[in-house]
Length: 485
Image (tube, rainbow, N blue to C red; front, top):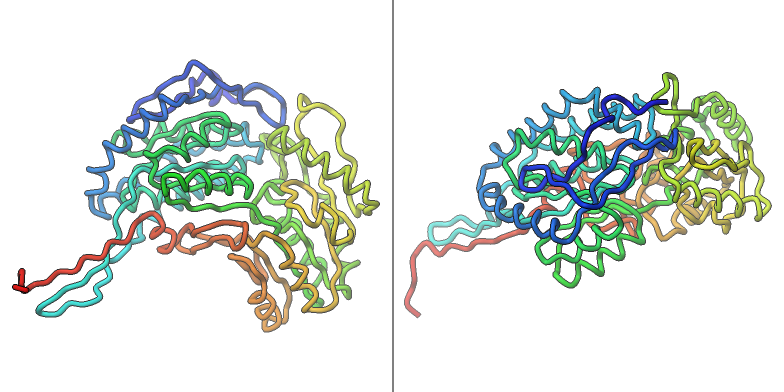
């Protein structure tokens, strides 16, 4: 397959101070479905980081002094520009990330929705005392220059989660996309410069060295990161030297608990897409499926039958429902996980054969379902982040809750059943920041969410998430003037 015409010939650049900037070094971006070269992304150096922070700092004073309504209008203009370019952006996103066109469209239009809905949020002053002699009020003030470090699985939507509230709160933002998927981000942020004041929204593409440079830089006032828990811990250490604020949305090993009274045929699609949306490359994917003993075999068989009908292939091809694994590092990690699962003697209800071909043939991994493996196997204990998931039996409520919570993670979970009272009770016992009952992956710009335990620190989205982009400042005013002592 040829490179999409919307990709070919475009020269990708950082945006520094509202203008394109290039680097001596570049990295080749590869289509994970074909192995073909898409384009070259610049690799920012330390001097360019300094320059970008300086320009963002200069822009901060005027930007933060604008009203909420003025800043909200810029968010709406960003949404308008992105929506106008959605056809080109979705093709580019599919080419670099691998997801099907319809999923790329959903992601980009989701980011448009995020900007528009976030623009409606406001942080109000809190008046604690307002008497004739004294007024005490707490207000929210912008932090300064923010670094938004974005992963490769949802590079546009998760950038919007950070950019929109950060800008609305009065901060200036420097985006660092993943080195695996920088192209669509570079393209969009270049295009929106026509509606954003210079220095307010910048982007730096880089390799594995740029992230640590950003998080350790004294000119960064806030870090917002989505990625692995291991990297999140490194950011905590790095940020501590400058007391830099941070919000971390990290890994998960999310349990899905299926109660006994479900209809297997109805349940099967919910399990499949709960686990395998975005090819399982999803921090809030269902990664451990606990099915009640009384319906286990019927639900398993219905799930396998459904999975066999799902079309895996190049996301640019019509009819594709699941694309490739995004990068070779994950491909190799999954290979190791498949081998370990076989070595432990686990039974596969579906799949299990890992491809032996090179990435030149595309990073495709057949969907795999593991049939009731031991609880201590890696496939149960680790976050898979790919198209393989274990099914596990349960009989006792206390036991399944204990097993669901027996993890260092606490990002999300779901409970499924027609007995809503029981499902709600179990949901309240799960140690996770986001728990769904009879649905999954439901979130929005007005709904706060954050991980428990090793799955994160802080909150994104909603008024609570917006507040995380500010400092509190309490002002006490003695209206009687300076009194003699």
